[in-house]
Image 1 (cartoon, rainbow, N blue to C red):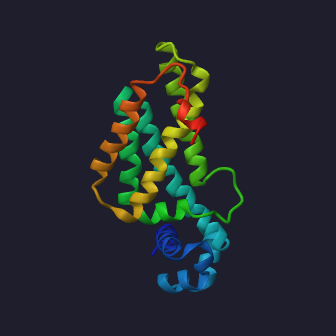
Image 2 (image 1 turned 180 degrees about the horizontal axis):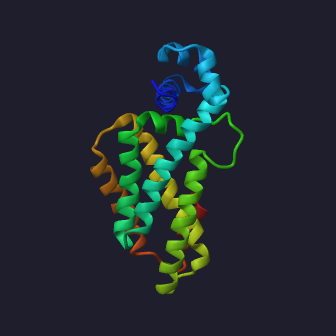
Length: 201
């Protein structure tokens, strides 16, 4: 096995073990054992468990970010919402272990390379798209970040739930998310207020 092949093997084994046991539950000993190599081989490639974990997280973030970004930038209007929801659900379906790793707390102190940083980037992009849309429709574009938080949060929370449920299908889940997002967005009020009922519960 070449050095590159060995590195890829260790990344895949580490990815599976981190998904199964979490960062704290995984050990260099078990990674080496599964790869049928000595511990120094793992240290040689990654410097330790934290280094391997960082590579795994970075790779998963790159894949997920490209899927979500492409869905937000290559389509228009409702299709953007559909594609973004489906991109996240497809990533979960195809790379379940990677998603399990991303939604856990990362032991690596970093502003980037975490699921929350991905969500922040998605919120930023959605906020920009909504601001333009709000301006065209005579709505206050300064409120776009609030709506972006709500939309991305709704999709992300539902996706995390679907990780274990897996039913209904990702297409049905995405369709219902879009139904709620889109049909709500198309009838936005310019200056919404709470009804008087909230004053006297």
